[in-house]
Length: 82
Image 1 (cartoon, rainbow, N blue to C red):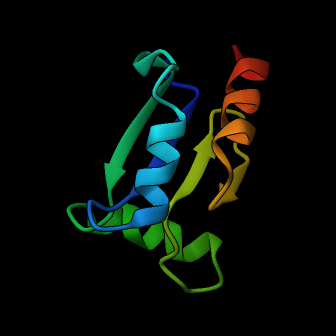
Image 2 (cartoon, rainbow, N blue to C red; image 1 turned 90 degrees about the vertical axis):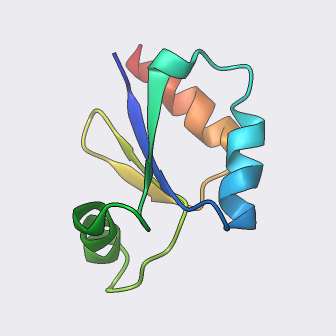
């Protein structure tokens, strides 16, 4: 089960950095949605970031979210939810 949804773009260096930091994590633990390709996802990102489309934004399975979090924070949260 995916414990995190990562809202990102292909061109974002912060997104690339986060994904590099998650390279050792089991890919089934998270899913990645490109907000450039999914308008509804982009609107959700804006709704939790004061109207700004800030990526990466991560939504966790417990309903919490984090904007531009460090990979270590995402890994720790996913491990807590597993």
